[in-house]
Image 1: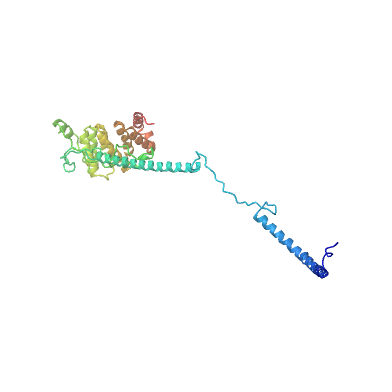
Image 2: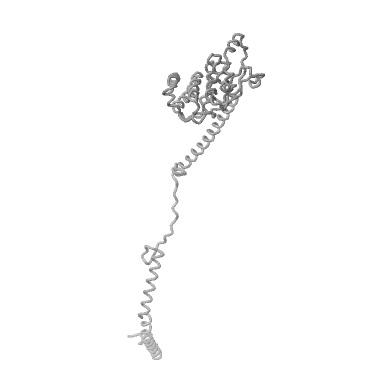
Length: 341
């Protein structure tokens, strides 16, 4: 029995009509629904949308399975520094130490320069103090009293007064003369002791020539006094000649002989400035080689081997002909006594 058996006729008629209507509606709508749901355009659009969603999902959640994606948000990893780890790199430590070393070097350099400056100032003061003349108060002026015996004394000063030629052989600026202040000797104090009557008489026996050439006569008279070994008188006479006739033809002889008068009198310190002046004034002078060699001898007597060797080396270089001929014996004697390296 079907479901319509137990119904009344009107009810059965209404149910059948309803079923027929439902079937009609289903029959008319089904093709349209099927056509709209399963059409080619809708299928293509759906697939395209699904593909774009999957592509977007892969970009946002890479590595997912397409349906469920695990979030990639994780807690930040915290690292704990191990005890004893250095706060800086070895390179930065090395740079810091180099900066400290450079600063120390700068301080040491500044201190060294200051010390050198102080030493130079002290040496300059000592040289200036030593350069003061030794003439006592009340000493007579040789120019004001021509009859008084006078002799130049060695003036001490800085070594910068030496000639440039003296520095050539040994690369040293100081002159052979010990701390010579200038090439012109300073006036000396007069002889304190009054000559005896016997000496005065002996000196008066030395005749002064009168040839009409005043300059030559003055020099010749000084030479005769020196030759007679009246050294103080020869010093006075030759000093008079040198001061009065500085342009004379025999001036090189006169300055050299004046130095010899002091050296032979046992005064090498007073002799050295005259030898140096004669060499410096005219290196081509007739007695310039003799003066340079005698300068070395003066330094030897003063036990100043260094300056003596400088003068001797300059003599051998500037006057090789004299060293091998006229002054050979004297040169060999001085060189052997100095024992220069």
